[in-house]
Image 1: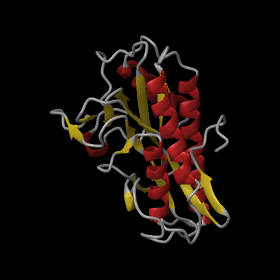
Image 2: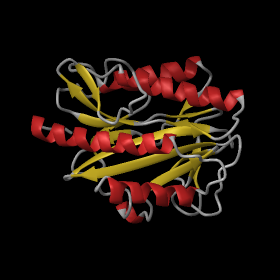
Image 3: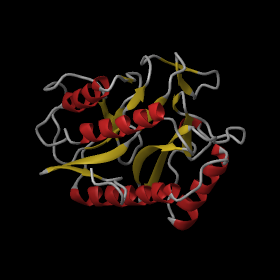
Image 4: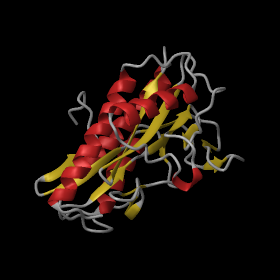
Length: 253
């Protein structure tokens, strides 16, 4: 979507608040906690301390403030008391936040305890792929440039990119046009213009890219049981390139 300067400033405020949620999670011991307990902590922080709204709660009938996707769960994992984070797990927390009518969306995959090198490398490569996509954002470039940069980096490192889910425009609504694919050909697709705001959120698998949705209608897992990782930021196209609205304090890009 395209925002005017005043709206972009409000989007940036939502982005900064959401970044602070992840900075709080960075300081939270995850080992031994249930994903529902973490969900509840995040809800209290967003509502009570940030005076904001967890935008995912109630969206499409979803009853929680975050998705918690562990190991072979690609996305949309449902927080549960029975899902206790164990040593060696990787877990993605996908969180949205609305303030003053504008929504920001971001996710991060965390390493729980001592994680084996193969899983650690997948997570690191996924994070790098996100930033490869972000660095392709600038006025006059094409959306296909983003997907091409992401998939090229994934394939060079032996990973597949999930095609079933994509980034999206965001602003007053969580999901708006355009769709941001994480694969594609350079020089193709919609031309990026200053003021556009959208998410980039690649999901990389250690095995094949095929996924399936479980019977709960939400939880998406890899078909072959391989590990999956994801990172996401909300970005705005600026006159000089790109602004990462949900950038955390520890990120340089």
